[in-house]
Image 1 (cartoon, rainbow, N blue to C red):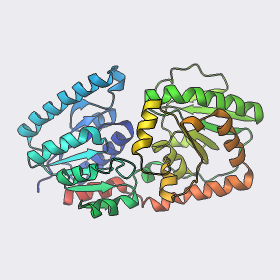
Image 2: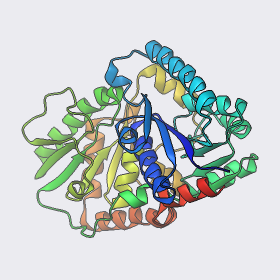
Image 3: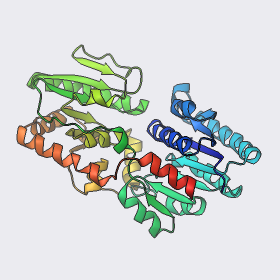
Image 4: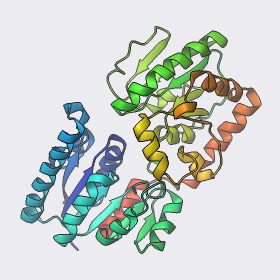
Length: 358
């Protein structure tokens, strides 16, 4: 099969960064390949042809209903584009809610679909696997247990490793600093930031009163929308070298918690939703934990403070407990063990080779 025309789509920031790295590897292997894309700023810089920005929908000020209409418009545009240009292969990166419609469209047009980075079907909505089985030629998964899960459900799947292995460096010094350097991570979505920042600020205030500590708030946005006290520095970069300076992290579940684990940074995971979303998700969630390191280990390695437990006093007690010298070193080594579980380096290149050679 020809590999001269490839279309790729990613709908959120973390997935889009991995998609961009995948495009770079595809172009390295086949310089003649023309890559078209929808996504965000990263894919805009790496693709030959950029069709729509679907990552920065929130930045446009779109309300949920407007987002739906916007994505429907994008889907119609893609249908016309696929019919006219006939990509040889379509790559979808995470973002199930919209990508399943692209996958169905591609199936109708008989264009093979490769899905890189699985939706979290193991956490909730397992029925999605059957829908993916009908539309996807191959799943390239990034968590080791996902390969067997998909194959047991009739989906051709291969574990390529986790792309964070290639992006996140390992810390080599694990002494607790004085003052303690605490990284504060409110999340990337506006709704999460709005709920998390007040809890984080109060936690930092209490912690500063108890021990000698300084704080850095890491956020991918230009600001959090909150006035930060002068003892909290703000950093909107994704510079892992800077993150090496922190001794402890207070962060939400998701990508950032896994990044911190791969660096060997002990942490407390917290997450708060609207009451409606919380009770809805609790009704459909199938996992005992929400932090990916706890899910992989099937035990509580990093403390979780979810919804009603997301209280500053509780988080502070967890920080004080974990920074005790022996406990801290033990936790750091335990977290670093996840690097071996998540594969070997060269993930994007491996994924690109599988897609191009299939």
